[in-house]
Image (cartoon, rainbow, N blue to C red; front, side, top):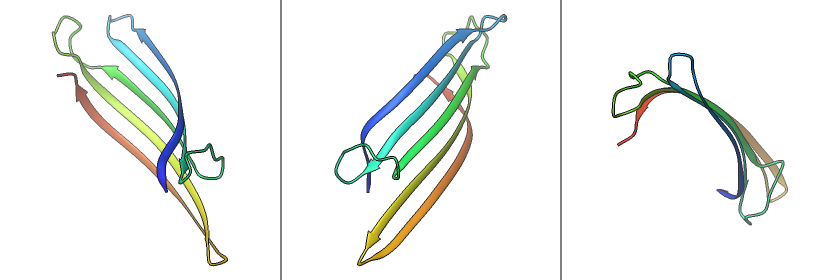
Length: 96
């Protein structure tokens, strides 16, 4: 299957007391061959980022954390197969 169909994001952003940006997001997406929403074949994710660079720097460096879980179920020749994949990533990003 392809990661296709609708993807729903809920995002938030705020400025901390130290004048650094912080972000969070929630995501739900369908994994589907036909492009329709599926609750059996889907991905859920949550992520966050906090600015680690000085607020006065021209480039904003962020420490990021993303956690996701995907699930797919298929029946091929009357044999049911399914898998679940979880992932977590910690990273640093910068806008260019």
